[in-house]
Length: 205
Image (cartoon, rainbow, N blue to C red; front, side):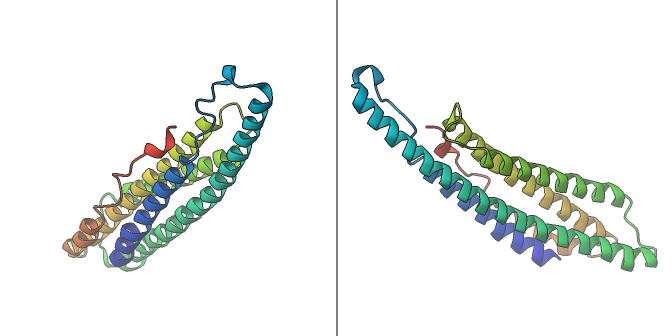
């Protein structure tokens, strides 16, 4: 259990951080309608510029939706693996430890925390998918929607961190009644660096 959680946390969440970083950089590469000086540009030239802006925005719309799909797929995969680990821990506790009379005093609270954080991930993912799907160049403020997409994905990442932490707490609690609490420390320590320092520079234009 601990090795699976360690690998998922150290690799998968870091992967999500890297993809998110590249995504925001790519989305920031082509600003939408900056400094055109409309009052000094002839009407026919302005029309051509508007056409170029529209094509640029449409390209970004496709990029946002493609990247959103990849990011949410990655996050969903991580969540599925976390779910499997949490389920195995609970099954081990109920089928192996409880029959031996070994119980964790705050077990119900630990499980409830796992479920709460799982729901938070699901909610964050749904919001991110919905906002990405609604992005359109015909909206009132496409630039604001780009920033919202990035904010949504960071919320997903934060929720995944909290979900992972609640599962680690459950593992530590269960192992505390088997005399193996110290064996959980490597898993806790190896997940200390999960890309929290990512920059959000790419979103503001």
